[in-house]
Image (cartoon, rainbow, N blue to C red):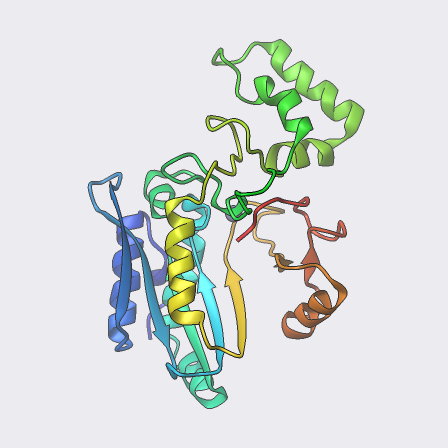
Length: 273
Ligand SMILES: [Zn+2]
């Protein structure tokens, strides 16, 4: 039995090795989408995929990590632990559920210690229909010069003006302005992109390959960095009609929160996966 602590890594390269090793130990084949860019240590960057359990199962559980690059450490550790978990494998077999592990959705950010992709895109804002009018975030545009100041370190006035925004509109409004997503400045924060980015296209290929023909698909995408240290939240990121919310709560428990009705620590977002 591998200790849970041994499932966690200190670099993307180490995390990838552990994932590949755990999948191999389980006898699984790993498919890889390689990003043609070097990692921070010169290592190969890839989105890796492995399926546990009956391949032709009608039900598929997806567990993915590293949507926001550097947040991949937690998700990767959980994936390695699950791959090594005999009880999970037995339960999947018994219930007829296949489990698809997607390791490092955004391998560039994972390796380089960044939240965003190689083209400064927030992957979890990149899933909009780019043939249509982009979502707008006027509050972001208003405070963008304060968030990404030309001068570094920024002058004290910068901080004061941000504090004034908070005093007037509240912390929640600042969080929504910053993290809601914006589609105007490729050098700015939480940029949703001008087109589907590499990770978006690779993920779509993976979902077509492994998701097609399933009767039911559930998906857990592991993130970090929101809320209190050590706390956790199950955030519904899907259609928000009553039936979907009710089904999510039936599957994942009544504690499931939503970004659409103010029950989540996260504000409403555009372009989620
Ligand atoms: Zn995240």
